[in-house]
Length: 101
Length: 382
Ligand code: SF4
Ligand code: SF4
Picture (tube, rainbow over the protein chains, first blue to last red):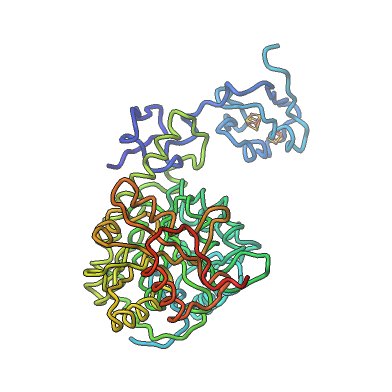
């Protein structure tokens, strides 16, 4: 039995081993895994400093930085607050604040 | 086509005939010749594969995992310390259910520094979710490589093919190389249902909580159970193209035996000769070679040994603090099923030769003594 685990918003319902692919590797794409709830710091992009190099987009380990109207935009449903984007930004354009402030 | 070659080269040509697409390897005696030959084969254009030179065995297995995840047929070879260095990645390959095939030339673990035959290296990897084959001839090394890919790609479990250092790796034997057209029919290209593909992105190795991890273990066990029959079928299908049959166990003169010796690797072939000599002396002895230890062919073994009065296991390995590993496995298979006394011998560690006379000594000792014994050191110098 081949089950297609989809990257869209319709995940297959798993009730047991019989519904599962052989390996965890195939359970689905990271779009199904909303890692935003892990975040305890929130990165914020200062668009006055941003030079649109998209290094942040490249290094972000989650599908959390999207390119909208030729600007990097953070999707907080997925941003887990690892701050790799802030670390790698060549213009120090990404600052952060504590979550829950 | 028949050729004379070392056991190591039988592994290289096996990989070539299997049309492996990625080879990632790090040299280690006594395995080095396998991948050295393969790098020649690739450089000569006789195999369309990517040969990746890596900085360690851990990286070799990591590269094979990456290659296999994208759907490529991946191969590597190693020995002893190299296999031990891969340990973490072996679990990874197993649980990621990647059909990688690896050759391991059984070499003693150091220290004392040894490059000679001993099964402790591969048996230390018994619980990593790899199927494990122990070959006893150069022909079987080549044939097993082809059969292993067929089985691995069907059940989605990797296979480790092991054989004794020097007794096989560096010994010349006649090997029949099947025609590539026949092999291609037997082993079509690998087409996985799930692979790393930019056009169909999936997460690989992502967080798996307790709601799912347990079921993945269950599924791995299911695959191992299924593999028993699939190994048999793949063996029979291979027999059709080559005339050579491989099974999980190879009994020799066991039908009417009073006592059966249980062996593996090259010791098993020597034991066949010892059995013939013992039979000529009127002793009803047989030899059961365990070719596949994972999945463990419990039912098949019980079928062969059930009527026998006594069993004697010869282990070229030891689990320190208990006993030989093939012996432990055999006894756990017998428990709750049949009551047969088992005498367990340790022999040939670190490549010490186990001659026909040594095997006859052990057999005669077992014939004379009815008491079970977990651990008898054959020929230890005290
Ligand atoms: S790395 Fe910094 S400068 Fe580059 S696009 Fe991202 S925010 Fe802008
Ligand atoms: S902190 Fe930056 S790099 Fe990390 S997940 Fe959020 S957007 Fe991506």
